[in-house]
Image (cartoon, rainbow, N blue to C red; front, side):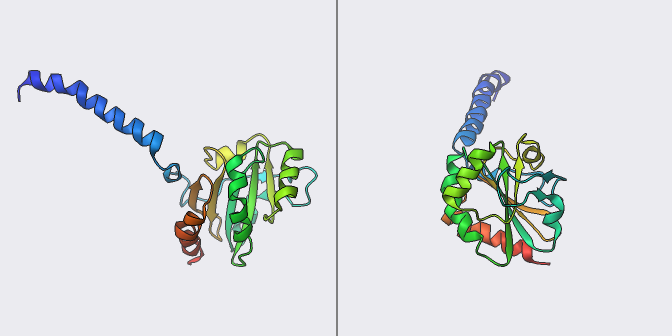
Length: 181
């Protein structure tokens, strides 16, 4: 190939590469977004309870108590959060894990209505009114769910709503891996 042919094909190759990444971004699996926090300790945080709720707030120290913790970041205004809620309720029945929540950028009255309507599977819920703690966790959007080992190290991140398929597949496997010493 001559230099002229290469220069002619170069824009086509660049376009093809850009089209590939655009397609992957639009139609790829959002749950595969990487997280720089996997294998790192949970960020420091101290979130108050939702105003008017009977569930206590949430602190980072509570995730270092020796038991695997599932941390679900949710909001009352989030439709997929409502869809995954029955699965969280089932997950909360497990005695080998602790299920906690971070209520992201929500009004207390709305969060309380949400919990009253659907039930409350969480042992603790931190009200992240400003969204700062969620940013520190690397949350792109709600819902996102993390698996934290008993030492407070983030072991897995699931982006998007939990489904029966991914809960009974990789997610449960990740809980089991986090329980291993």
